[in-house]
Length: 162
Image 1 (cartoon, rainbow, N blue to C red):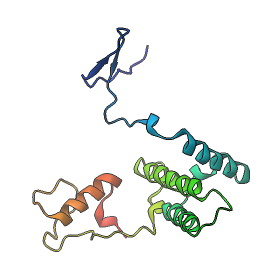
Image 2: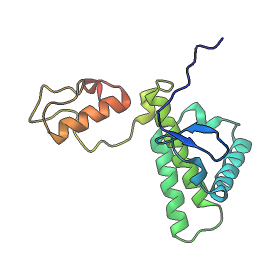
Image 3: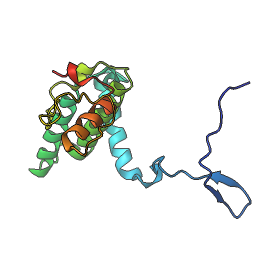
């Protein structure tokens, strides 16, 4: 017997057949993705698997590497280079960067994979130097709010930021 429960938002959709289903609000709409672009990106996954290894990209590479590669592919496309599918390669790199960032957040990859990413806000607030980002800020300070969001997003202690 399973210990899992079926989550229920309380918002249901009734179908003409009499069937009912919990609404998918906030879960994403995969059917809005283009099967055409998916096919091109999937082909890029296949090509990479043949060149490197089936799931090589999941082993962990710095997110900045994916960002740099995506930008180079976008630049090549914008220059008119059609020698390879640069748009699919750019989307593939963004996908891998998103996945890697999520794996770091889940603790399945080390935070070193986020190194090289520039933060454009400080790790401490000059107006509230004792604020550490552990609890939601009581002030409306934008810097404290950013510190809090960063610590929550990556589940980190800002005093350990390099």
